[in-house]
Image (cartoon, rainbow, N blue to C red; front, side, top):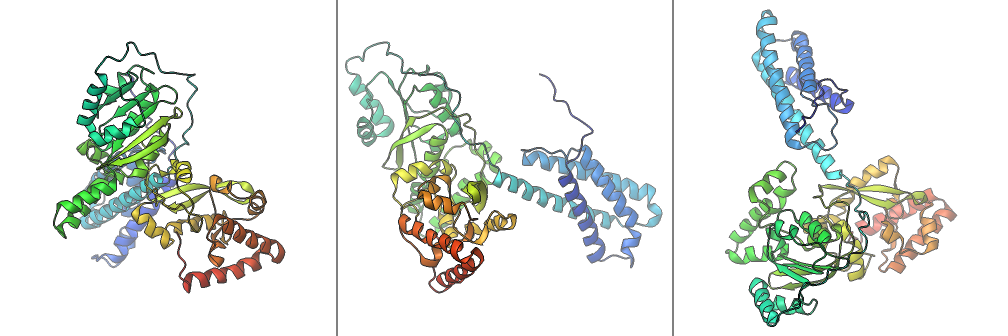
Length: 512
């Protein structure tokens, strides 16, 4: 196997280098300015020491490849490089103090303190920078792979033997129960030799299937017990013919919560559930603990939301046909729609960037705190088709929004990062709200044209008159845009600002 070539000399990424220089200056200043020292002139006594320490830190960091610009470097690898550079720096400075600067009577405590503060500062900066990249990392849109050509199910090698129906029923009832058998019988032909049923968490059992041999694949193993859900969906997608069906099941997050709360006495049950939530939902989402969590648990007993499972299926090239809850499990019937380019695990964090239609029809990215379950971005069409819009132009029952997200939306906390868009000039304080292409397409042609003549705003005219239906929202935005054309944008925005202020403060209007 060829060894990867390591470049000892390289051009350092200037942002990483500048960050270290600033942190070095802060560390030295904090120690010499605020820590109790025996000398009255700390900056004069330790000036050469500070320069030597800084130069040593920068050089060891350079040769430890801390300044190499890598788009997606793992957090663990970055920490190892920081540790290596800091240990070498500390060792070199010890040699310097005892052999080269011995006559200056430099304090070993000063070295230890500056070194520790620098390590802490760099670690915090490293965590925050990785967290930001992790949170705002934008993966490429899911696209159709190269056309594989029409693929129809292969002809069954033999006719269905007698007694097959009873045998299949017995197998399905044993695997999933009679209710599941009755539900599936209404949607698929379980007896057909082109229907394949199994109950497995091992990908090998699906890999070994012949391509296009079955037009229906059913896996009775709950997805909560499977590691690599996307990969399994991708393999099933490849094995199915055009319009083939895939049926899977999972225990939703709400059922898991209900089961835990009912299994313990009142008071203790919430403590157990909180610990379970932190272990099963928080740790897998933190960049520092995510990989360790999956290595320990092997992905077993995962907590999955309904939105996440449906979104994963859509991400992996399926469209949702039907979903139905039977006892503790939700069964999903999905039809193969296309073969995606990639089915890798997606990255999610606290921040999210959403594509919105701006001035002149240009698409720009709005910054928000994440309020939806993972993979929810692939469910917008499904949610729009399944659920009607409620008052205010939102969906009646949007399963994509998580519990914390509902609170954040009611208090506008999720929109705080949009201040970055205000500073960048993509938006203004008062204006029509930034909306997606799909929502934009619902508007009339006249309103679309007027909208693209103005920047969207942080405070939409919606909160001036509180419209309820989509038609009323369009009329509200039209009145605002016409007023901007007739009375001027500045004057109109000033009037609307105070109307919005009155509605929010005195009428206590809240975001949906």
